[in-house]
Amino acid sequence: MSNPNLSEPKFGFNEYAERLNGRAAMIGFVLAIIIEAVTGQGVASWLGLI
Image (cartoon, rainbow, N blue to C red):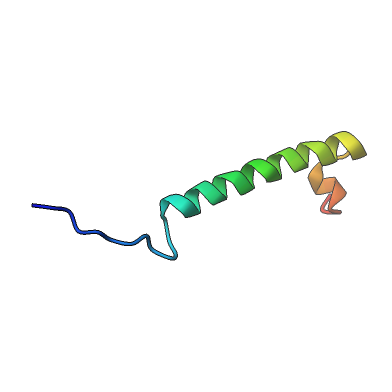
C-alpha cells in the first residue's frame, strides 16, 4: 500500500506554523532582553503596566 499524497493544511498545527511561531517567540524574547538592557526597566514597566 502507498500513502496518500496530502497537501499541508493552510491553518492549524502544522510544521510550518510551529516553526514560524518558534521563530517569532525567539525574536520577542531577544527584543525583551534588549529593551530591558537599554532602558533599565522591565518590559512590563516599559509598557506602563506597573
